[in-house]
Length: 520
Image (cartoon, rainbow, N blue to C red; front, side, top):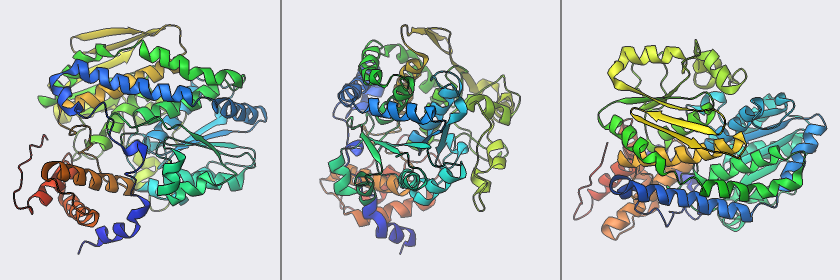
């Protein structure tokens, strides 16, 4: 008997989220894995269309932006701080917004008044801190450790609306401050209330202000790093942009929609082809950007959990596999200097007893994207194995340069915050289609998803059920699927697809097993 599987099954009903809109397959991208190989122009068009449709829905949901902007403005005027909280992709967007405030991209007179944190601390920006998001008490503890006090405002973002860490922080904020927190999420209230008790508790709490941004399914099923995180980042950023004039905030989604429609992203095609060709021949890519550093870091690091790639490596561990792509700041002399340059402040780590080795200061210093990174990787991999992908530019120009490909994207008549949003959407399309060409999903299902927390265990099990039904007409029961998934997970190697390996195991027990073609 698999004890881990049995323990999960006891609580599985709290994480069975297949009925939520953010977990549904997008109807426009059901053939995306095939289009990534056969018709990149159409693949880019459909992914761009998915962004446009999400922003159209955002425009219809814009009215609460005025109240959110008012809350931010009143908090800052009173001399208090605005805290931003998230987990995974929403944690990275929270940190991004703080960085934008520190760099003047968002108009905050005193940048120290914005304090962002994500599950696992700053190191979680580039390295998953396993299972942190499943603990509401960790969210409350991180909030308290940063000095959150009466009068301070917490803005929590969670794409699904059900992340325990974020809910824990939000509920604790109601106890510590008379300034009611905001809770932003991307699933309809009725779905959350019917499916998830912890979400129902938040929705029914009169001390929490809610903002539902349900903008439909993701271009890759369940990959909320894409459309959901885009609208959440935009919403909070627009509220900051107009904290001094809140009535102007609800007009921003329409403006962003018009800008997005004007950038088709077809310029990405040669870059998608080039980067995937580099990986196919065993090479690696180093991304460099000062201007768009946090936006580039976010996209490159989110590839690891989404597609089961090796993450940015600990430079003190020579046995750790090298990540396919890595971010680099070659002007910085060492790891801590690079972290400081990226964040605009000293990094915040979690030196708590028991987790300091994975989330503490010493652990963070081992993740180096300074000039030393190139030295480390050249020693391990050799100079012929690396290509530099530069994303820079000045003014309204954003330059993309990789190998022989060089394109300048003009983004006039918009703020720098809008440019970051446009670049984010472009990079999401780029990385997703690169991974499609590398066989890292099937149709539009994340078959390489890494089941590192309860929500992702459920997601992986659902995908096995869906694919089994497509191939055999038979949908296996949930418990059998979960037990097979846990058995496979024990022996899974980095880079292997847990969904497809589990499917293979289950197909082998059928009367007529079907051979699967799995790209690795």
